[in-house]
Length: 349
Image 1 (cartoon, rainbow, N blue to C red):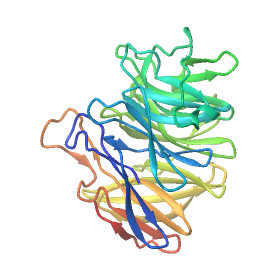
Image 2 (cartoon, helix red, strand yellow):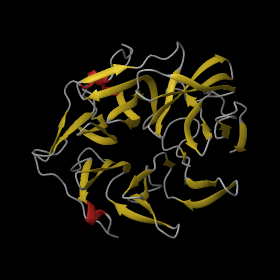
Image 3 (cartoon, one colour):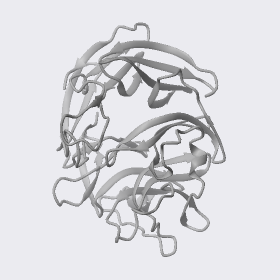
C-alpha cells in the first residue's frame, strides 16, 4: 500500500516520509515493512517478477530513488539523477524510466538494458540529440497500445500541446504526439489539451482500458472519462451512468474491472464496481455507500479491497479548504467479499 502527498500546495503538503505497508491475508495483519525517503508512493511496478517502487519525490535535497524488493523481503535503494521518478516500463529488453527533472537538464526519459538494470548499480542511456525530449520536464506514466509504447508527461511552461510522446524503436527516438486529443474523445471542452494525462490503465486481450484524466494540484490528476483503445488511432469512450467518475481499473483472470463513484449527497458516495470480458458489455458486480469515494481497489482470493480517498477541489485555496469526499474517511481500507456487499473496515489511518 502506498501513501503520502508530494504536492507543495494544499492542506497536507509534502506528507512524507511515505511508509510501505502490506496486508497478510492469512494472518489478517498489517506490517509496516519499509520507510522510504519520499513524500509519496503511489505506484508499484513488477519487472521480471520483482517488485519496484519509483521514488516519487525525495525529501530535502537527496537524489531520486528506485526501490527494489529483494528475495528476503528487504527493500534496497537505487540512487538515480532527477528530482522525481514517476514510472518504470519494460519494453524491447530495456527498462525505461519516467523522471521529473529541471527544465535545463538532459532528458526526462532515460533507459537501461535489462541485464544492466537488474544489477546493483545500473548505468543509464541518454538518447542523443535530436531524440532528446526537449518539450517536457516530467514523464508521469508509460502505457502500451498493442506494440506501441507511449508516455504521458507534462509540457513545459508556455507549451500548450499535450505532453504525450511515442517511442520509435527503429529510430531510437521519442517524438511528441501531435494529436493526443484522439486519446480523449468526448472530454469536457473546459479541459485544455496541456492538462490531458493517463495514469491508470490495464490491458485486456491486447486492448488498453484506461482512465483519461486532467493534471490537477501539481503531480496529481482528476478523472474525466473511461476509454478503450484497440490501436493508437482507434479509441472509444466507455459510457458510465451520469454522475459516476472512474477512479481505478484492473484486469484479473481475463476480466476487466472498473471502480467508479458518484456523490449522492454531502459525505455520501455510491461506490460501484463493474466488470467486462470484452470492454464493450459491462455488468455491475457490487455497490455500496460510504462518506467518501474509493480511489483504488484490488481483488484477491474472492475479496475486493478498497482504499478510500479524498480530493482537494480548488487548488487556488490557501485556507478553508473544500474537498470532494471526507478527509476523515480517507485512508480507511475496506474489504468486501464478492458474495457480500457489506464492507468490513480493515484499517483506519
